Image (cartoon, rainbow, N blue to C red; front, side, top):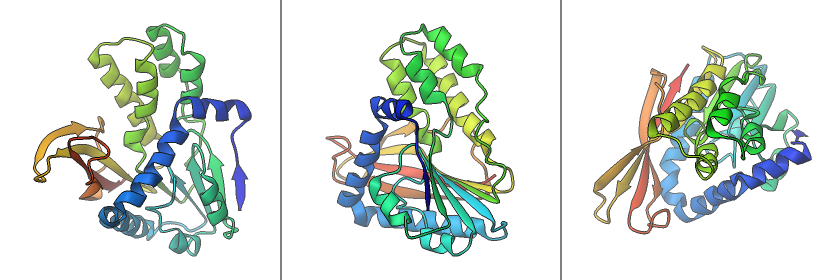
Length: 259
């Protein structure tokens, strides 16, 4: 197994925008909600394996590999010559787990690189200057087109959250500008995936439920069209203990599709 890590400066940026804290929070929630998550994790693994059929077996990539909770890693390592796991930070436990697989490469990278660098380095800039820096940057410096199979895993709806939260504390924009920025970030990710060799699994809607399990509110998470080819949808029972919010449970609508 090979590990390609960030330069020290980028590691500081990742920590400062709150990603590592957010990543740890996912594992803690999984431990609390394990039984409720099993259906979602199983469906994700099954979809990845189904989508991998008919693809070349030389090299594949998982974008947003995280804790590998929803990745059928044992099956994949026996099917592909090389597996590249991309995430902005790989937890020590995952590094250890993957160390027994010689065909796995762990790559620490912002898949919209260098979005976080632009954000961090322009934190004192005016809003228009920051937006221009994003709009004028070339995002396709990560070439995923060399892969036989690429999986975007519970990533699309996450890409805009931390940058938008971080930026919103520093600048004021009208709602339509925030929406345009979210759309821009999400569409750039979809555009980076090789056609006919990629699948995407993403939450697209957040459901808020009361104690009687009635939906009382919804929140959209994805603002671009999702691929409908061989698509499937299901519900992820994300939080049933009212710990994400104090007064409601949270489920997600999940979409899986091939590009």
